[in-house]
Each structure stands twice: as structure tokens, then as C-alpha cells.
Length: 414
Image 1 (cartoon, rainbow, N blue to C red):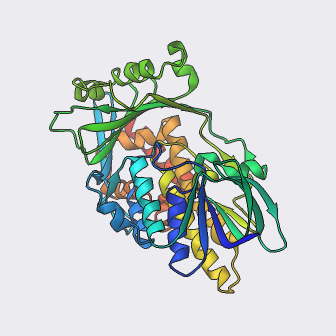
Image 2 (cartoon, one colour):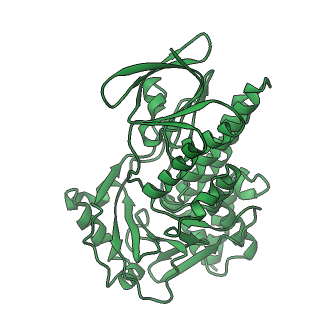
Image 3 (cartoon, rainbow, N blue to C red):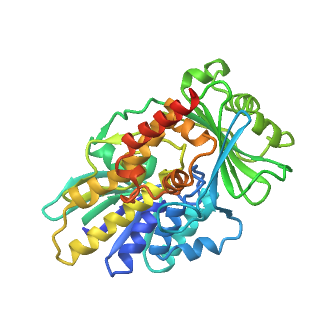
């Protein structure tokens, strides 16, 4: 039987980062992914904390050398004729204030290719189909793309399989999300934006003019193209009979700013229209005696604040650091140092995701004459620094958002 110290399931950002952290300290690891790269995936607007973690993993230089990635320094929001933006370089928390908007197929491939070039073994086309607890670690059953199966005994397994959620399925860890089952329809288009007021260095999140629980993302790339998608409850799109193209165009052109800046856009392109449904997910636990779940393999909230890759990278760094200490003979507390610590940021993001859909956080974002202090604290959250406990919008997120909403409500009735 093949033996490895660590098996990493999934070659996406969290798998690449975890492998980089482990390999440079001499820990033997192998990365398995059933899909060959490059492959299309959304989550194209990174947050500055992603760049912070990639730098820590010695992967940022490989990203920065790719000239086709769009520099990003903030997030903009529109609703009717209202417009608000946050400059990530002006934030409460320390750390980088800029990052990139990327085509994920290329971004993910750059990361895993960099890791492989440094000596990490990566096996594409190999799917993990079985997991058994062993006397020491776990035994994985793997099916290669030619149909043959083999086994690996690992001291520890990191599940970075993202939406594949390999271990949650194999170990019956999946539980229903407490978020409603929304759906997203999306594609890439030639945006042909000539409006000089439009800032390509920021993602644009637009609240639909009629339905405040429906929103559109517009993520500009450097070559006159962008990723565009609409998110909402299925009943909002029911009349369109699941036609993603009609859904997108209808909801996009009902928004004044989008209708204006995309008036010359070209919607005929090589990227097909796509749909994902019921993407929010949760699990009963984040780790076991010989495994831990990273990123979307554990819990996925919602794409509205582009938190997915940030949570994935944060969980990879935390788990890798714990494994490094554990293999060195140190006693570590996975509950306190991984599960509880990871949920600090996840729960903060959850507060603002829920606040976005119930309208309270939208009111805060679109509030005119917002104080610089509040803006900097919000900017830190939107930049991905949701684990900074010095920011009151992190640890006391529910209470603080409620208080901000009450202040705004009083101002509206003056």
C-alpha cells in the first residue's frame, strides 16, 4: 500500500496553498483531482486578504507575473441611480489593500503548476471514492481515469475539493444550509464599456431596481471582457423557463447603471451561459481525527461578497500550520485552533450576507455621508479581513449591524 503523510483532495486554490505550506517544511504530500486543469469556475474577484495569504504561501509572485489579471483595489455598489464604493487601501485592518480579478481557469492552473514545479506530486484524473479510518491515519480508495483503483494510507487528509465536497459526501457530514436555495445565472461577455466614470479596478455589485434580494455582479477583466451574473431566488426567474441568457439580459437591463454602461456590449461569445442552483452548503463538523475540510468543501455561504476563495485560503493556511506543528510532535487543538477560529470569519461573513438579503446591510452601504470610521471598518470586511478581532464588525457582527441599521433608520425619519 502506498503511504503518504498528507493527501490533499482537490487542486484548487486551497489545495495549492495547503500543499505549498506543507511542502516547504518538508512534509510529504500528494494532491489528487479528478478533473484536468484548466477548468472553468466562478469566484473570479479575489479579496486583498487572498493576496496576503498567497504571499504567505510564496505563491503571490506567480500570480502577479500574469499580465492578464485585472488589478483590483475596491468594490462598488449601484442601486437605481445610487452609487457607493469602498477603497480597500483605506480600511481598518492591517494587510494588503489590493488584489486581482482573474479568470479562475488560468488562476487555479498557475497556482497548482507553481506548486508542482517545486516538487509536489499532483495527480489529475484521480478521484477519491472511499475513506476508511485506519490504525494510523486513513486509507483512501482512489479511481484513476482509466478505471483502475488503488489505495493510499495517509497520516492526514485535507479535503480541498470545493463544490465536489468529497469527504462530506463519503462521511455523511452534509447538513442543510440555513440560507435559502438561491441560483445564479452567468457568463462572460465583451463589455465594450466606454464610460470614463466606470472603474475597472473594482467589482461592481448592483441591486436590482425592483427586487432588493436580486443582485448582479460585473467583474471586469483587462481585455474588454467581464464576468457577469445574476443571483436570486428561483421564483424570481420562473417566468423565463430556465433560459439563462434571457434571465441575465432581462435583469441586467432593468438596472439603470448597467443599462447605461453595457449599452454597446456583445453577448455572443465562446463562454456558454451557465447556472448553479442551491449552492449554499454546510457540514456537521469541520475536522476529524485524521481529516479536515477546507473552503467550499466545508461551508459555502453566497457569492455576494466574493468570500469563497478567501475562506478557502484562510482555512488552508490554518490547517497547514496546525499539521506542521502536529507532525513536529506538538499537541494541537483542532476544535479551538481550527474549527472555532475559522468560524469567526465565516460567521462574520454570514452576518453581512444575511444583512444584504434582508436589506439592512444594503442600507448601510448605500447610506450617504457615511462616517470614515465606519467606512474603513466595512472596507476591512469587504477586503476579506473577517478574522481581525480588533474590528468590532467582526466579533460583534450581528449586534453592530443591527445598531448601524437602527442609526440609519432614525436618520431616514428625521
